[in-house]
Amino acid sequence: MNKQDIQLLYQYNQWANKRILDRTENVTTGQFLKPASYPHGGLRGTLTHTLFAEWLWRRRWQGESPMSGMKPEDFPTFAALRARWVEEDKALNSFIGGLTDEKLNASFQYKTMRGDQMENILWQAVVHVVNHGTQHRSETAAMLTEFKHSPGDIDLIVFVREMG
Image (cartoon, rainbow, N blue to C red; front, side):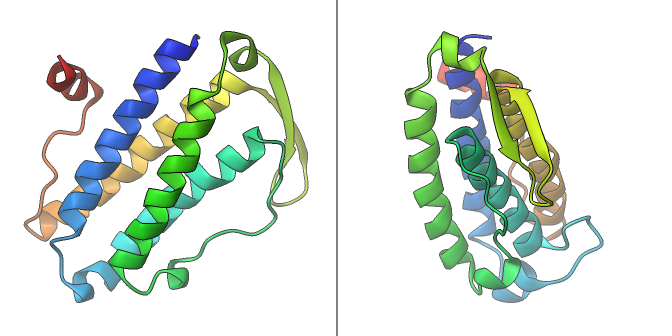
């Protein structure tokens, strides 16, 4: 895996997240807070989990091992969640921009939130985050569609075609 490929994946990730967030902006507060039977709950819970994963993994890649994270209650409104996401996008873009092929193919160590010591190849964990986000964007898209606010197609190939 090389830096150019990773940058494309993260441009896609940001584009897909933006499509989800733009449509979420149209739901009512009640819909944003409404519980659901998805693994992380409704819109707020699922979006919080997705944002938290991006934050957690970036911190791990930077040599930290956070032992606590974000909770849905940290974001009483969609505006609060989106503002925090804008901050994370900046930090994540900065990290991805500073990568080299050498760094991507090297291993890194971190502790899980349970304290277990782990080691992975960086590019594999970086791709994992995009893949993980795809699962939760799909869940969020289903919820948004139920609320009549479908984000439309959020596939990688749609992004690539739009970028020309």
